[in-house]
Length: 156
Image (cartoon, rainbow, N blue to C red; front, top):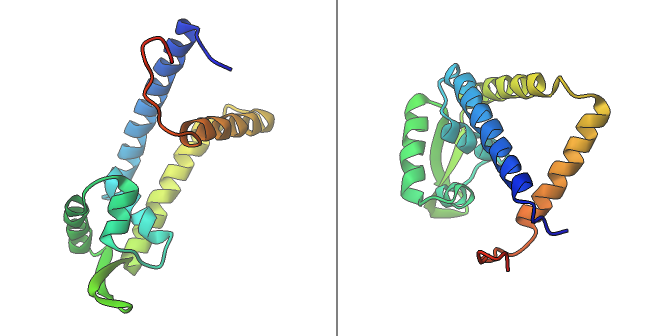
């Protein structure tokens, strides 16, 4: 289905912007209680989902240059939340891993974000949540499942 109703598109854009702006601010506030920023939290989550990873892996997923990640990793190392060590499979490379303290901080931050999400979703019934999940999965498929195209002003 092709949506051409300008009012519907504008309304959805405004809702997305409003909701994600508020969620972003609330998440940042909760993370600040643990001493983490949103980018640090994202990096630590990425590392935590693996045993270890390289700076280039993190840079690729966050779509930034490795030098930007290196600076963030420096701060995380200084805080005692991650370690750098030689990659056993390639001695020229360095891998990043969470420290025990980093795992604890990440768990605390995730718990705060989970509680926040639960609070947001408390207004929905089980059926509404299931529908919301299906709709978001469909939107995700639409966003990520097709090749990026340039769209002309006429929508073609």
